[in-house]
Image 1 (cartoon, rainbow, N blue to C red):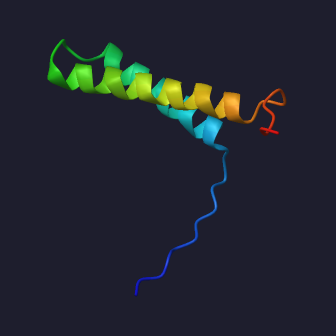
Image 2 (image 1 turned 90 degrees about the horizontal axis):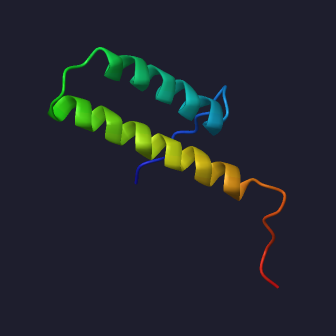
Length: 66
């Protein structure tokens, strides 16, 4: 049986997503149109969606069902 490794992040998920988005946008600016650029743009959209979901899930307006 394998054991799970515990890892504590120094930054929040939102901070890591925003940094990755900024890095990917910079990378996309220097790329020519093609499959690789499409993959980078897709990853940017995925990170933005994850960031929005995280914001929604941690918002104070979100309440548990009764």
